[in-house]
Length: 603
Ligand code: BGC
View 1 (tube, rainbow, N blue to C red):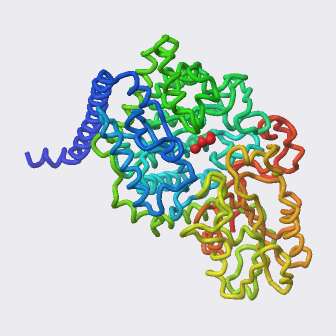
View 2: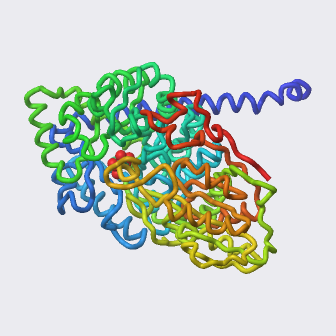
View 3: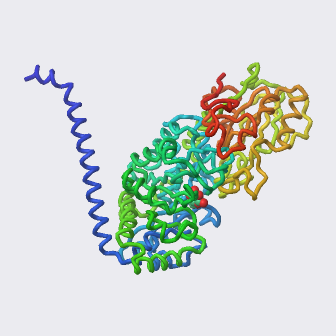
């Protein structure tokens, strides 16, 4: 007996694991069966008005008046920027608790989903931990880190009252002129797929935990592949190309049980994606078996075909900027006249209720007040700083110009981007289009250099200070913040170019021509054509849009950490390479980039 026990004792943990895995799987299956039953029985109780209400997403200020949530049976509330619901996170929570109570006071007491554009951290809240934008996370190629960043974003989003984020953007950018390149991880489908999985895992966990949120894979499909990089423009790719290059991250997202997919602003072969039944319903829902919510993008209902977008498969409508009443009455009319079937409405509502049950909102409708203390905590910022360090790509390092010695007698730090957490963070930071102001809790690149240097550090904002006795010039140049539309190169609203501004080119020239060792750090949401400036500098670093932990950059410049970032995009050589519909990498492989995808030096 004893001897046979000894013989088999090694198998016991294995058998237990098999059993517990099996149990876990069974419990998961059981849970899903129970949820489906609950969804079905709740749906049976609902009137058409209540169903259409569930399909409505509104802005909590501005779009609605006092009792709208209850009287119009609203399903979800969105926050992007603008009138702050309150100063502190507690006040934000209180505001949302009030709205949630309205929803719970209705006949069926269905809780609200609160969605937020937390694109790189809970960036709508002043004081949150803000991560490098996805292009920087792409440069880290570190899936574990991306998962951690997403989990922290989820906690800080929950702490400010949200249970849903409109992230990650899993586009494959075809043209650096697109103003949303930085929202995507990479031009590589493979890298994007790996990081998509990590991001969704980190945001969602098992969904029912009060520290996690529902994620959104966006924008389905072709957002980054429009001709000439125009936001919401025309994408003319073949189905083959879409399947090969754009679809794999969505497949991964659906496998990872992403809660929502957002329809894209672009047209696909002239048809608005919002009205593309073949992709939204036949491919995404039926073929790929996506059972979550297809949410429209901003004003998608009035912009892209009204009830046709519901028929195409959009389940929840961002009924903002005056769209709400029209959407609700017009959809009702369409159901009454059978233009939209009840079957379609039921499918949409089931998907919304399903996610609310998966999030356990019926039991836990309110945010957890104990999470407030985690917003912008040191532990969270440490991970963000690690992400900053790992996102930096060293493009040039002539004569080991870097790392800088901490004993360097005099360092001149040049450029307004060196001393502004707003400028270093890009769009979707505090405001939709970003800010040029410093924001709460963030550190700048200049802060970091001052902290680590043992010598004299002087700041020359516009390179007019003539600090020509400096041993080293660290010059920070780049793009000013932008988000969708306003960031497109070629868009009528701006004069953005694929090159640095004349002023920024001059900053570099001023110091390099005096023979001062010149280190350039580029802050940008995309690779820029900086071939000449790279030649003029001794070392050149692509730092993307690092977010709130700007001082992490100094830790690498001074050699406390080595560079590990690798280019998530191939780096262009000349502007003329972008004269076609797409970037050179996507239309003419014979055009050689200055640096290939995956390039990056080390000490
Ligand atoms: C953007 C989305 C965003 C939504 C809500 C749209 O204009 O395309 O990415 O989530 O607004 O703010």
